[in-house]
Length: 288
Image 1: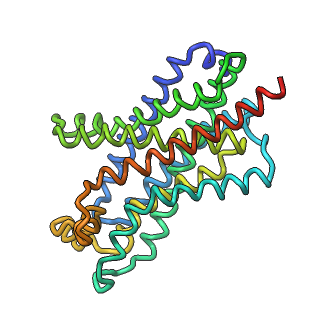
Image 2: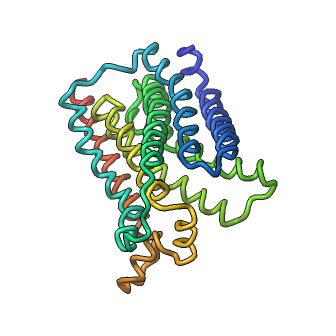
Image 3: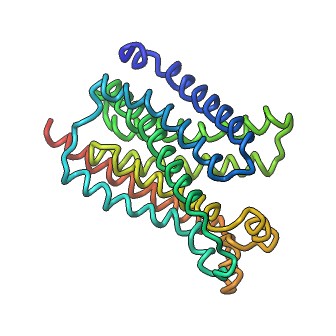
């Protein structure tokens, strides 16, 4: 199977897209059944993602893509991965400016959200950086800049896989609004930058563990309000434009679109990722 996938990368990529779409549709269908219960909603997502993650984890073990790092490298990966805190800040900072009187913590929901976010990190990192990345590197290992090429391709695929949100919306609603499509296209850009960074850390540390954790934390930063505020309160925030980075920028009179700050953070991740990859490539070249 490994040999077939290496020889037919296109089929492997199509398989990734199909698996991602089916996963999204099934999870969405089950979640819609429990849309009024936030705890069950996130537990369904967690269980679905953990089950799906079993396949790439199995392939990692079977194809020998696991156990090639050491504790020092992994620890360093967790430290480098802390750069992703920058990626989380635009989601966290705005809620620091909202009165705590609105907060009603649902601890069962908080735990379910944490488990769901870690499941997303595990599923996506094992599939893209745990299996697809080393598979491409092995295929191109005799070519120059093999790590860089593998990181770019896997990150492009990782970004494009997120278009399945638009596909799901179109399949469910029969129409796709322009703002939905544009928002999804921007998501492709920032997930590409995110993918280059996570690929860089994975290549540098030879382990997916740091990025499984930090990937989960990034998803948690986007979802944590669902465990701290009732749904009606979050809808009220949307009406007031609270809980957004633009709300904070306007509050301090900073006349810069929110998207500019996001783009700057994405660029930092992109640069750090490529620097890590290049460092590994230089070390590899010096041994030849």
